[in-house]
Length: 373
Image (cartoon, helix red, strand yellow):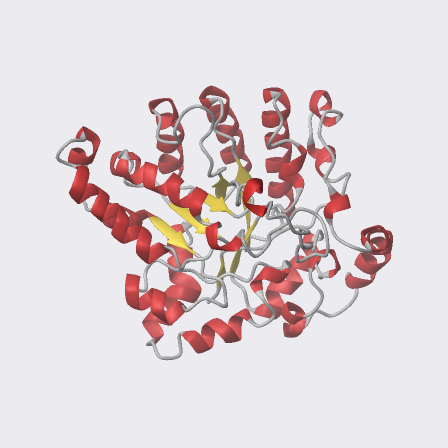
């Protein structure tokens, strides 16, 4: 069985507004499709005809190696996405947004920020509503703890399978602040994990890109996406976030709380586990919250957090360093970062392990973590 821990919808300009309350709809920002790379206007003009044709075309197992982005079957059509799952043999798939956060998540107006959140969560729930294999990922900003609880309850009422949290500090306080304890308690009680994802935290500060030379185009041919120097530090924001939750005792106080780091790679995980334990051993004599921990910090991560490696990472090394229980399979469909052969690449990487380890990676680690098994 296959649990796909990462997939996306590919939004269009008017998509999110259709789910927003009237008082928020006109205040949402642009989707930012001008950053989609060369030929974007021509692409978007061709999509209605392409998507209509895909509704009647057969979807085969080679769909994963075919067109990506908006051209991929099921990019924004849930019925076609279900046929993609059929073709790939995927039994459960987390579904994230792609661009819609840019319309509201960084707004200085809390009404826009939280109104956009509710609209997005409605949209994700509706996309996944007619296929139990499609698991909607909601979104939740933590800047205002009271409103965060209100929107979390609304998202849980919509049936989200996970809640995407920004991995930066919510404002002038930590994600482990006492005012956010009700958020962690509510997630733990509901059995709904939080997830961290690329795009939810800052990349390399722009000053480090200013080297006096022309700035290279990103991998889409333009815009403001990931570049080579961003990649090695991709995990800094989520690693800080998880370290605070561990060392300030959030996982200790809420043992049923679950979390995951998605599309952030995993080569950093072995070092994080060791550094958390080093911090506890070195500073627990002086810090009361560290003294309250009854497990080693790394053991809280093992118990409560999961990660998705990229296909090009050394998955056997990760398993050797950390064990088989921490890592999950993902396709990132229909984004190109997941590669065109993730099933084969990860299958080959795990071929030296027994059936139990392969079952953990491709199914059980994700399915158990997200309440399916």
